[in-house]
Image 1 (spheres, rainbow, N blue to C red):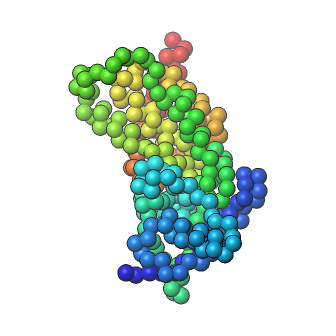
Image 2: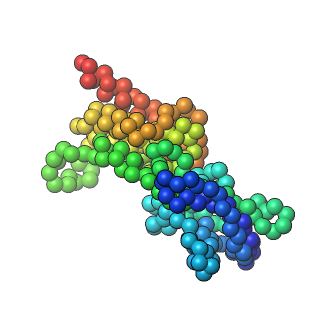
Length: 257
C-alpha cells in the first residue's frame, strides 16, 4: 500500500480573542487509505509525545452524517472531493506531490463572521441552530401520528422536500461563499417544509423568522455565484433559493393584505 509524507500548514489560534497564525508540521509514511481525520489524529499523537498542544478540530460521527468535520483544505471546504472531511482519504492528494515526495496541505477553519473561531480549527456554528429554532419546526398539535399514506403528496413535491431535507447543516456553503451567505442552508430548510402540507400552517411566520434570524446572525447576502452548490456533498440545489425568495415575498405580501 502506497504511503506518503506530508507537510501540514495548520491554522493555530489559542482562543477567539487571540491572533491566529499558520504553523507547519510534518507527518511521515501516511498510507493512502488513511482518512484525513485519522491523519490529524496521528499528528496529534506526535505533538503530545513531544509535549506540544494537539490541534483542536471538530468531529463526531466520522461517517459523513453529522457535518461536524468543518475544515477548509487547500482553500476548499471539506477538501478536493465533494464529501465531508471525515470521508476524505489521503489518496485524494496523491497527485499533489511537489517532487520531493512531500505534499503540502493547508488546513483552515470555516471563515465567516457568523462562525467565530473557538480554537484552532474549531468554529462556533450555533448560529445555524438559532436559525432552525427561529422557525424550522411545526408547533401545531396534530394529535397522534397519522397513517403514512393518509396525506397524499405529489411525487415531485415529496422528492423536492426529501432532497432539501438531506442538508446536514455542515456550513460548507457558507465557507465557500465570498459573502459568507447562508442562503443555501436556510433555503433548504424552508423549501423542505414549503413542499409538504404539514408546513402550511406556519409557512409565513417560518420563512420570515428564519430569514430575519439569518440576517441578525451576520451572514452575507447571496449574489448567485454558485460556489455553495459546488461544494455541497449532499448536492443541495440553488433552486431552493428561488423557493425561499418566493415564499419570503408571499409572506411579506400576506402580512400587508
